[in-house]
Length: 518
Image (cartoon, rainbow, N blue to C red; front, side, top):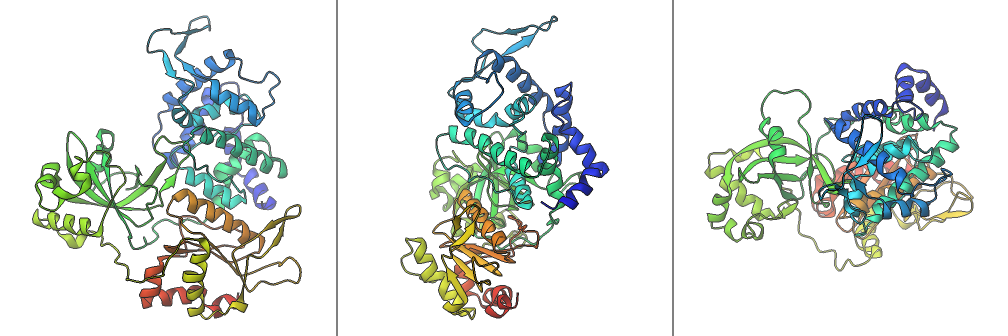
C-alpha cells in the first residue's frame, strides 16, 4: 500500500469522517450501523436499516445466552465453525427494564440452526454484531455487490481466498472467517487500527481506481430470460421515464452470464408478459452471502410490445421451446438459443415493434479446434497457434516458469513473455494464464486473482486469462491494479480467428512487436 497516499487520505476530511464512522468502540452501535448502511447505499441502493438493526438486536439477544462465544474473546476457525453450526435465532423483545424475553410460540423460530443457506445470507448483519464485540471480525457489507469488495481488495493488493465451490453452505459461512483472517493480516502489516482497516477497504480503495462508467459494452454472446415479480415492477415501469438515479439494477442471473449479454425480462403473475430487453453490464457476480448466489447488473433497457404467456404458448415456434412447455417455471437465468431470440424478434415485429432497436446476437464463425478436454489442449490447440499468428515464436515466452514468492514458495504462471533478470526473473511485460473452462463465474474470478498475483510479481503491464471459449486481457497499471469488470479485450476464439478486424485489434494490443517494446 502506498503509505504516502494513505496518510494524505487519513488526514483529509473524507478520511477522518470515514475512519470515525467505522470506529467499533462507540457507545451506541445502532447509530454506527445506521451510518455504515447509509454509506453503503451508493452501491446497494436503498437499504432497510430497520431490518438490519432488528437482526443486530436478535444476535445480541441470542448469541450471548447460548454458550457459543469464547469467554476470553479469542477466536479460532474451529470456534467459529462451532458457532455457525450451533447458533439459532429465536424472536425476542426487550421490556421496559431492559430484560430480554424470548417468545415461545410456533412462529418464534426465525432461523433454525441447520439452515445454512439462510445463515450465509445472515453473515452481513452477523458481521456487525461480531465487529462491535471482537477485534478479529470486520463488517461484511454489500451482500449483492461482492464484486466491489473484490475490486477494492485488488486495488490494495489483498489476495482474497478463492470463493468456495460447494453445495455445503457451511463453506460460505466459513469463507467470511477466512476473509477476516486475510484482512487482519493486511491490517497488521500496515499498522492500521480496526476503523482504519475498514475505511481503507471500503473507501480509500475506491479512490485508487479509475472510473469506468459508460464504457462500451462488448458484443453479446448469449441470451438469457429471467423473471420479474411485484418488487421489481416499480423499477421496470420507470423505463423510459425521467427519474433520479441511474438506469441499472441488480438482477438474478445464470452464473455463465457475460458482460454484454442480452437479458429478456418476463414479468410473472399477475402480469404474465415479456416486458423489456436489457444488456448485462457486468459478469454474473457471484455473491457468497446472497441467497441467490449469482446476479448481474442490467442496463440499456428497451421496452417490448407485451408478449403474453398465452402468445408464447400458442405460437407455433415457442409452443415447443422447453421453458414454455414447462409453463415458464424456474425461469430465472434460462438460456435462449440464437434461433429462440430470432423468433422472439419476429414476434416483436408482428406486434408492431421496431426490431432494429434491439441488440443483435453475436454470430460466431464456424471453426473446429479438435478435442479440447484438458488445459494443455487449450494451450496447444488454441492459444499457441494464435500467438504464432501474432508474430511470436516459442523463444519469446517461458511456460510454467517457477518464480520465488514469499518464503521459498513457487509461483508458476502458464505463459511469461519476454522475462527479464538472471535470477528469479524480475519482470515480464505480459503473463497469460490458461484454464480449461471458466464458464462458471467463480472459476473466472479465481483465475483473474491468480493471474493478477503473477502480474504483480513480475511487474507486468498486461495480463490475460483464457479457456476453451474465450480470451480476456486486462491492463495492469504501475500500482498493480487491474479492473475485473473492464477488460482491455474480450472475445471468443471463434471471433478472434474468424474476424479479421478482431484479429487486427488483438495484434495492435499484444502483437509481438508491441509487447517486446514494453
